[in-house]
Length: 477
Length: 120
Image 1 (cartoon, rainbow over the protein chains, first blue to last red):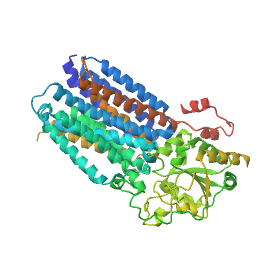
Image 2: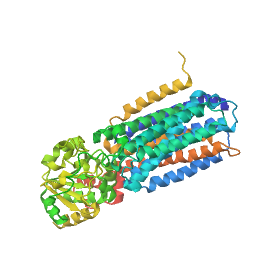
Image 3: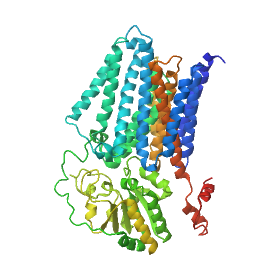
Image 4: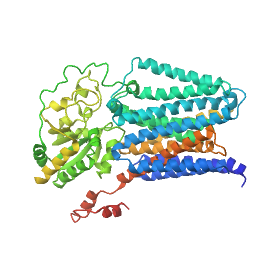
């Protein structure tokens, strides 16, 4: 078969098949029963796409391609095998960044090849075509923002960069908007510049996009990371789509658009779960600046605390127990201990379920993955809407490293920073145990009324150690 | 009306976006993390563009950029699909507890092998 025939017929058919596999893959990935197959189908689609890309090239020097793929495969596989489930948010954040930078690199490479290396005589838009010239600049901009934005998110998730607290520069809104306009201007100038002269402008655009990624992410607080990670996921899809425009390949446009949509949906779900607008999250500084409501009443006055022995005695007679996990569970790596305790209680005939707040943890679904790792059946993990009516009839609630998502003030005090945020109604249960290292506030930076309630008892300590204590006590009953 | 490549591209982009929304709107919270890492792997599709940029006889700046793009996009693809599978495997496996119920108390301690067999 001639190369011409392969390029004009075989390769487009392969790309179409690949697109179809992606669509089926994503569709199945969205249902628990078929999710694993869906992932495999999408992976086959990817393999087909790569085969198509190699066929399209024909006979060339493959050394760099194969070398690059080998290195990428080894690094990717190492990440996938070694990452701990508690660190999934970090890994996804990092990978979002890789997706972004890959698209920016492809666009830059195309530009460099067609404009700089071939010494194009006229302007950039004459050398690339206006459409392609514009999409090259957009790819660089979006890819750059995604890259450094993801790296900052990664550092925040790791508790670096002032322990994930928002970093607020003076006049940051002006700086950010200024740079955004500057990036459009630089892109425009680069498109209209003559071949060799454009390099400076493209480099300037790249630098500004990298700086923008940092500036857009540093003001956002650690608790808002589920939103940010979702949004960056969406950006990485958008960046892939832009790269598709640059090289004129609909497969990239389609796959990127679908990833972009998936990221946006998750972003939306997270925002609704916090009763905040996306803009409000992105503007950042939540729980730090503009210190309205909070002030003054931050001191706790009547907190009761107890040890594992006392808690075990209440658990002994409990007929129903709801466990509410939060980020503290992940930090303490306590997912296996919590399952062990739940098993012990179930052996005693107690009904045990888990109440999962949509933004518990540091990425959408973080708690579900952790508990799945510890073999907790996913049927026992109940969503907020399902479990909230249950609390009234529940004997004991155990809160493990969650804070703001169980603060009753959200539904009582309209001036609170978390006013209107849907919460798990843990306070309605007969007894509430809060396992927490100290009385320090959650990310919203406010006091949690629940800790002072009469039916609440604090068990101070690391979640895992407390759970092990509880397991020991329950065994001795 | 004739559509240039850019307009066709925009049509495709918008329609694919809608397809994405339609498919994913009702995803259960259990799958949020795997969906995200799976989507992440798919965004590594950029590797298709990177391949064309990395062909070389005498390496140029453009080729080096292309090769870097291949590395980063491949990390995304391979790492993304593998880690998603690792997570979904955890959701899929039968719980020893369920087995216990079926085995009517006979299985006080179920071995890891027992679990594997059940999952197939």
